[in-house]
Length: 498
Ligand SMILES: Cc1ncc(COP(=O)(O)O)c(C=O)c1O
Image (cartoon, rainbow, N blue to C red; front, side):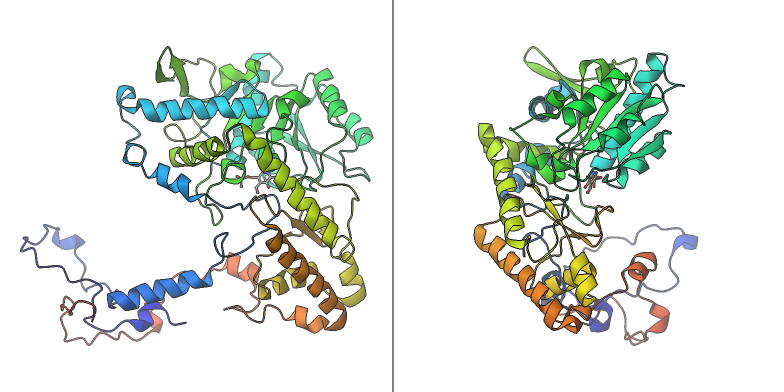
């Protein structure tokens, strides 16, 4: 496909506005360009076709099944976009006085209340912009709390299981703590014997995802809580997998002291590619004084921003956090109402259905019922046919499915981590399972087909490391001829649509 610059023809325009007869802008001589910019010149229909063709090449939840494990790529209901575009929300300035933004404050307050109820912890801050920022905020709260108790010097370690997402140790390091790894046992739970040896007076806390990134609910959670609380340490819940348990069980009831939500996962939000996210945190009473400011509070029938928290860790994001994300997630939760539990129940059902269909064709490292996602291993395909999990993932693209998360968690060799979400019908799950089974057969019969996949996508197999490390994001004008004849004026008007 040609670049927009390669489609450019001198004098063409995507719009023709009447001349305004305005005086030239007063730009100081030294700041003026010496030559006009080399911008693409193209008619409106060609412009629309160009970007539509590019959009057709992308893949998203609106174009197909996207079972990226732990990322919860669920359908984003369009009603959320309608409400976030209501002028009262859309046009609100973050510095609007409280009197004139009561609706927005009420929405934030109500969202805080709902989130507190979902995880069973009383105090919420909506500020962090992503799960990872929620993690850092939670760890800074731990620091502030222990400093306040006079234990700040002593407690310097955070325990993290070997299944943890990479953001967990990164957040621990950023917060100035030391990460201490703990093993997983043969059933996929935290290894309690290993854990006991690693928790003591030096421990500030635990970071745990439950269900874990293996898609398994930790059967030892009561014992884990006992170990940490007896040592006077705190428990942090990484809420990336909350989609499995909403309305069914609550991290606060298991003993967690701090929880983050990934609003963009559990409560829908167009995400991926670094899109907007929300990572609110909920905490126990004793941690509330340290939460970021401002807090949204209700006084009688009105709502206001409270900055009066002398022990606060300060601000972690501008204003009150990502407001558009709050509106969408609030709309999403309210559309379920008291039936929110059904969301998680169907997510778990869909994952177990897929697991049952795929478990014989791929290896299942931990043979248990899964929660909202599960992890398979492609180790046998590699051993027997020389086909890797990367080859399987690339071949799935030929079947028009987004590949699942691969090579994570790190403790499963050749891992494929599959999360179907609750918004997929049985037909889609079956089509995906059929494709995975067909690929397992192809691995045995025509392994080279997988090695060279994808065959039918706009681009073949990419050098992903190079694409990430040395992306080509700029059109190098110096390497391409300027199609604009030098004697023609650049501001030439073209007929509409020409
Ligand atoms: C288990 C787990 N923890 C934490 C995170 C970080 O969340 P975010 O991407 O919102 O920063 C992720 C993200 O995928 C995750 O899967």
